[in-house]
Amino acid sequence: MVNENSKNMEKVCEIISKHGHDPHKLIPILQEIQEEYSYLPQDVMLFVAKELGVSPSSVYGVATFYAHFTLEAKGKYVIKVCDGTACHVKKSEGILKELNSLLGLSNEKRTSDDRLFTLETVACLGACGLAPVVVINDKVYGTMTPEKTRELIESIRKEEAANA
Image (tube, rainbow, N blue to C red; front, side, top):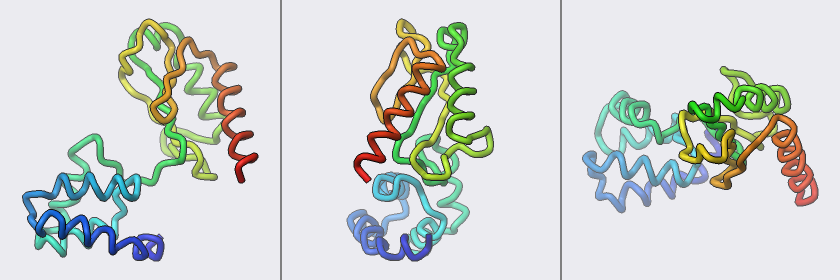
């Protein structure tokens, strides 16, 4: 992974330079880096700390404080399952169980081995009238069931295989 990150370190340097090596711009710097990588790799955070003249713990502290930053690589398809009140009452738990089983995931393992899927549980997606709701890469799927969810994942896998 370090080699992969090293190839793109030029982009990180551009981002830092664009912000004038200003440690007060750490949040926008990390946001742009995450946009580039889809997460914040550890070696990149260490590099940012060195370049900005701040401690690695300061960078890590910011990266772990704000919920929109992630320290783990995510899959190509990020699946968000709503477990808010309306969705929970309409059995979103069954959808979560189906996805964990289908993708080989657990509470400790959130991304599939093929790095195709990442599963997240969210408190509310604001689509209570469509409960239970699943969002995959910003596309909303309402009135889901474990069976409909399985069919959706299978169709994504078929599409991926056809494009491979």
